[in-house]
Length: 447
Image (cartoon, rainbow, N blue to C red; front, top):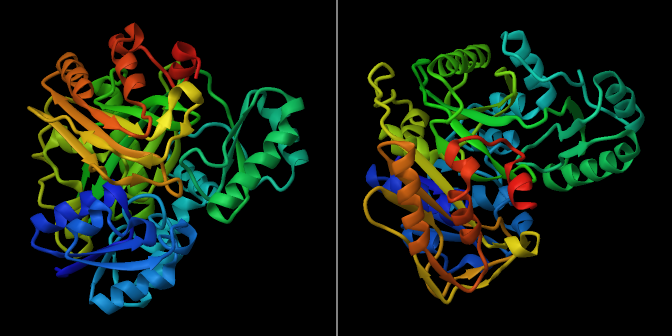
């Protein structure tokens, strides 16, 4: 086992990784931009190194500076968190070349599953169902138009080199296609350095279901209960819960089988997440695999008691999983609410600024992952996620009641947040019935 880990990230995920490292007796190194010099992750780490100015491209995405920070502090491993460099195969490869353990899958695996077209072929060859779509990258909007006519509108344009809703556009009719193609390509190029797009048939009112997996170097694996991620706005998740209200035990077993087929096909190691759409007929369709820790991993930890970050660290060091795959117990229901520094009443406009007061909820079965503390500042340079409220109950009804209590306790003075929207969701009759899809926010709130 390595003894010192550098966390190549910031904010709540850096704090999250630091905590598991401390539980394991590992020393930690934080990296930070000049804007983040007083941030919570810097305060909690054993050491901290400045890697550049506020802009992410010059700091948290600056590979030479991050590698140098690891070398000068004597770190032996790097945990990338999520976002930034977490799914950058070049970064993972550079870590290996510099004798640094990258806490994640092998660079070749990241590259394969990051290339959406190659991933689709690999998954299809493994017998996992896909959504009908393009066989390769669409070079021009004319190619896209021809394919859309074959598939039938509406269609979905997606970035081939990334995810998280970036470089993604729904096109309902031919007259919208050229503009949508150009905008999606530009956005993908800005976000991932690659403007390549592919196309899928757009499913109306699907549910977004994902499967968390974790495999050690002997191929022993954990397939966790599914997470329901359908409450989204513009493909950005807002609320997640596990288990899904829409997935039966039989469907859960089917998803686990699909996930194992993909793992076998690519010899996956460490933590990852396979994402599916569930259509109105009850059929699942693979959409992508995230080769990293997910934002919503906390709800999986709450229902299983497994520290996924701790297992990541152990697997990366060559250890076996500490949890017996046959003995993992699943108990209760958990829900996560993403608290973003955004104004839902103003088209979710970013709301950076000074945090004058911050009171986080607590009490039985409430977990808060956050970067906030009074006097800190939310900057416009980074993602708007500032806290995650994660709540557990013996069943879904109890989890919802506790969630209302937790969100009522939450107080953040300064930036506007999504707190009020979450409370409205918790009182919505469709949400309470578990009857929702990815179009829920638009249909119920007009957002």
